[in-house]
Image (cartoon, rainbow, N blue to C red; front, side, top):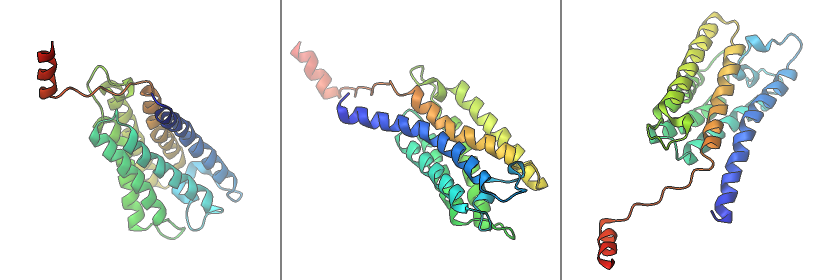
Amino acid sequence: MDVRGRGARQGRLVAAVAAPLLLMAGTLLAEALQPPGFDPLDATLSDMASLDAAHREVMTGVIIGMGAWFAVTGWWLAVVGKAGRIMLGAGGAACLGIIAYPVSEDAVPLQHFVFATLAFSALSLWPVAGMRRSVDAPWPVRPAAAITVSAVLCVLSAWFTVTVTREAGMGLPEHILAVIQVTWPSVVAFASRDRPRAAAAPSPGRREYAEQAR
């Protein structure tokens, strides 16, 4: 591998470590900056980026970073099937849509609800959509791991939906869901870090020429 390719790979691995840290550290900071009486177990990430939140720029920046991470990994995680990569990128774009239409204490814009639904759906289903059955595929991309992760994410999404309808306890399922959604692309990136590029198959013409040369 040349220096340029090695540098790109190392940069991706650094990003794979930084993305989960950004989410967790940024969330803790945003929670700490909220006024007394704030309960993170009863608040969503969107609440901390709402128009009424204290220092909303912190969580706004975190969600933008998450969206960028999903979009970038959807582009360069070549070991993932095409459908999964598209869904991962779409989930990242939906995160940016969430920020474009923030909630307030008085209202939740319809656009925010739509983008949040798209984000949670795409980011929960991309592992199973992008799984590969090849024995050479990294273990996180194979059916057993991919189906399991998507199932767990769907269960967490359902739990989160129930808490939203009850308007209580939304923070815990969303925090767990967000951490897994941000971390799983990192797991795939590290599992595939040493995979060499597949050599291109020779064209029929070149194969015939090689046989004649013998």
